[in-house]
Length: 378
Image (cartoon, rainbow, N blue to C red; front, top):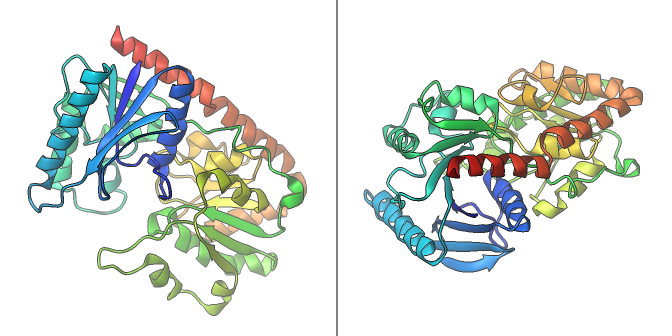
């Protein structure tokens, strides 16, 4: 098959990337190794790119910034790229995120799929934002045009269905894959006692502020605790750096026990999880969340959010721990529970990796996707 993604997030050299970029990097590699052809089309802020990277055919053009009509120009640009790619190598499946198909012209013979990574309808209610009319229309048109829907968690499917009706579309839940060979079983000799590791964008919805505020209560019982934060910076619309805004609210005591480190390349992420005694990701909301199962795959004790897809990833106190991320005391109490159980956490660590192998293994995820693609193409 030839699978084409409408996306601007495929990891280009020397560029940081988030969850969707991680998904594309892992999933495209799986498809290529299984003999499929993969293309990525889209528009980016930088100069256009047309090259083959890790077997993936990249077709990027520079994004228009003309106020008022940039959306139309960009849609026409993507449409023209798809037409050319399809003429050269017939496309079987084309995938986009919520809103990604709206004004893009796609040849009728290509099967159109929306993969739910979390769209505007999904996030606006959790972030207390007013629903954008423009983004809402884009998603409604996209879901009307698509032939099928793949949800990356049951939660994102259920929540999105409250706003967008896709009951008449073929749909399925398929989690994002975790490259289990990359996230090896961690070396216990490299664990730093008291090290709490957080990885993710440094912004409010990732729960990092609440995690920092939980430190004083944790340190009263475990004074060796220190928080290591790895993540990309995030800015408010007015240009204010979130990290600076957050630190201004903290006491000197909290600041002394936090270390910020730059985000590392994805291949080096296992080294970050490896030294942590506990990995904590108290997100206010996630679509699926990759960092929790990545760390679980390394047999780390993980504290994840009990909201959204958290219970789909972790069975509380069996293969990890769930916390209420908006409640500072609950975060601290959950981490204290983990540290109090130091001598008995081994069973949780091994169960964590087993859960990932059962639920997120690349081979199983690839088979589910390909089976669904073949079903659509019948």
